[in-house]
Length: 389
Image (cartoon, rainbow, N blue to C red; front, top):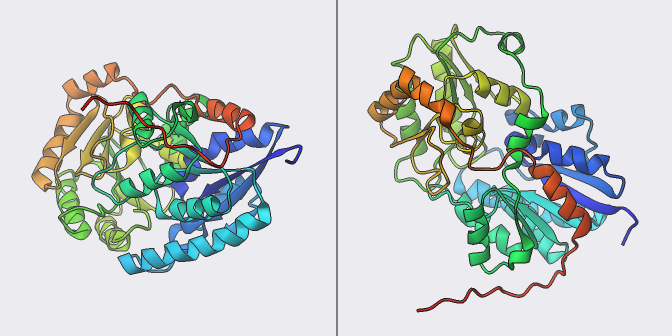
């Protein structure tokens, strides 16, 4: 083994990179480790803002770029992108020869990376395993990666138990909390005037932050579900509404077009952004009166900031949810009623009692210590849990 253990962190999207930011910082600063960064997926796409540039602006060197994203979001195109990713990661990992590969989450780009690393006999450290999202095929991807991984860093104790239930040995599974909360503890968020200057818009109350991604296993089409959301938002003409555009999932481009049309009709108090960056996004979340959509950030970071979330549909079904979250179906009347309730004085007062269910913002340092000390055997026995039937 090299004198400096090589830790290769793979990132494919703006949101995922934001969650990994402080871990990247900590690995880079540790003299016993050598950080390697692979950028892939949406990071390399002009359509999604070429966000690999933000990685470089933040001071990280990108050791390799794996092009894999086709300019279509049909099931066939996503499947072909997955195949291209496996081919690209095979060559890249062979060239970089890392000691450990770090993968976060449940996107198809990470499934490609995990398959290539597994076949290359490189230990995988997986972050955010054990969670459930019953409304998206991400569910299957996440659990599949868990079975290929050798170290597991989960965000809550029920998730730790679920990874063990999948047959992973308890000594390999660590409850470290959600790394996204590290920003709230270690970063200085932007003030409202700073945000207004950066976004070039006035953030008049009520401020609604919207992030809605395609529900890939839903009964209703993504376009119809987005139509219900936009119909609900039309009832809040007095509000400032900021959208972040959907990810490159099946049906995502149609959702983006619908949002762009909505924004074009209301340019004074409504904006849409391809990528805000994690600092700006969390700063906006801190200033918002309610977060609306189906993003995991509404369940993880928003409660830690004691902000209301209107969680739409089944995309996040099965995840732990704090008292600040209002679940609704993809019906415009329910969505509008939930937004009104979230903005009420009574609900806003209750938010002061909200407790985070995903740790306290020190996940990156806990992960770092295990990456320094552990180098698991590539062979792992299946851990059987004793049951009485």
